[in-house]
Length: 219
Image 1 (cartoon, rainbow, N blue to C red):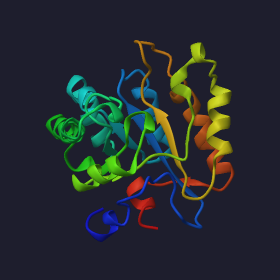
Image 2: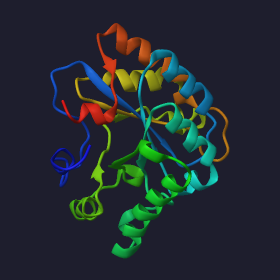
Image 3: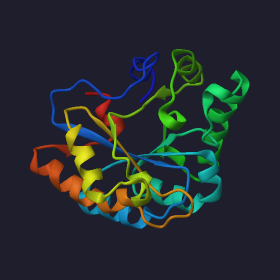
């Protein structure tokens, strides 16, 4: 998406998109490990469901092969900052560096044409001023309608059932679902990877289909 279509998103914290069609966008954040990658990519491929992966630049630097696999599978790649800091704690120049450095890291890792002009703030901590800064760098802020909270893991009281319920409770045309590719602190259990098949099955049963975020924004 370029030009007028992208600029229409500037100045806004975009968490859902107006459409009458029963379509949603599925997105994954990645800043930790890649423990859920095989299951997530496999399930998306089986369902022919596109997704957008918001990666930190640090993740791209550590896992260039993952970046290439996601791109080769036809999914979009979004910018999730370089080091996942709290933007409110940074000076303007440092905030700008976080965005630009992450974009460079994605491209250096081989993302190619999979790179999108979409940015998601770390911790979803947005402000009008910070959104304007991101827009000035050529990125639209894309947040989410709901997060499954699968990243919290069983230690944080989450289960696969709860992750599925959170996704379905927020279901509406034009919704943006956020999940996570891996888990923090070197955990190998990725609840979102386990929940994804059930979420996609339930979406289809309710008459919804998953479309590319870039397509959703043009409806």
